[in-house]
Length: 506
Image (cartoon, rainbow, N blue to C red; front, side):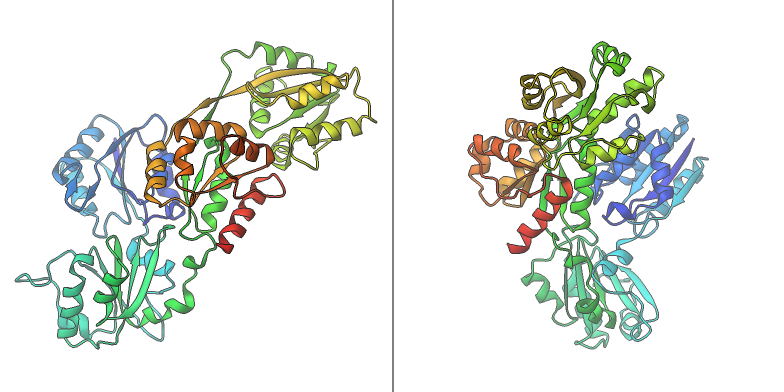
């Protein structure tokens, strides 16, 4: 038994430490707060028990004493427990209290530090907490305490007189009082001061003013919690060093509808450009219930002149069955191999196969034209194997058959509808807080519209619709919807570039 008190960081999932990630992966139970980015839970084992105990102002899912008891109880059941807390557990996170309870109960624990918003939010807003020309120390202060209460722990004259950078957390409600106390204690009214809202996330906003004007500026700009309040000369560097908020898709909210197995590249690229990515896979990739047909085809690979892969998933499941049969890439020695696009080609390369053919146009029609050309205009009598999804477009096999080829279409995997985050996406559309929905195939369009009717999107034309290629765009059109964004090249990098260009114009 053991409890890990893990700092989840301030919101950017990339700021979770490697040790925190590994402790999450090893946990039998994950006890977590209201996290700035719940994608961190993906690091936990799918078999781990996940218990939400989040606390937000005025609403506690579980009181602190019950959280303490829960950690002790789960650990004494012989389990590894990950206690996942926003920021750092020991910086205004009550991690010290939880650690004391564990010690008292004889439960071993480790504290895994996290990056606190007090450090990260200013950094992402271009404000270094210390700087040789401005400040050589930092004071981190809770802003949650009523500054007027008798016996306040804050020594306002000392804070006002110091050359330290002052960082207040959980203090937006008390911002006018914080500013007044510092001014009354002698701090100069024109001292630079800043607010950073939801630091390190795609929703980050920052504001720089003076100490005297900051409360009014906060009201005018509608700043609320969670915001970090910073007072000190270093705030003057914001305009020069504000790197994060300059990202080209900063603040844009974009839905990715691809299956989770396929979405990581697109989601990561959009996130890197500053977008808030909402992963709403409309399909899930699942294995076939029966692989007898594919296994039989693998047993006679030498009979085929060509094996055509139309997706990364087709490659993955093909090799899984190849391995199950005790074979490897050498089984394809007598075959030519085609890949419908660069991502599929990369997947083949990882298995030691350099595709013999990649079309110029990454659609079935492009593959057909290229294959016929590669066979000197005649594919009659040639045998082709297509390991692909159970349901897919029939253009390629039908046209090959018309040209006289013998084509075996074998189901290597299947796609099933999914409804993850449907309610959140619908709420964002109707609230006007969603910028774009991306579609990587016709099936993602059809499945998305089975969750969110086309009429909802028609009623909100501000939501931009992006398709990876013309076939997907045609599916949107067939449902009475426009395609606002479509790359010239039908690849994920090209789609990302098209999104960036589109919103740059906007």
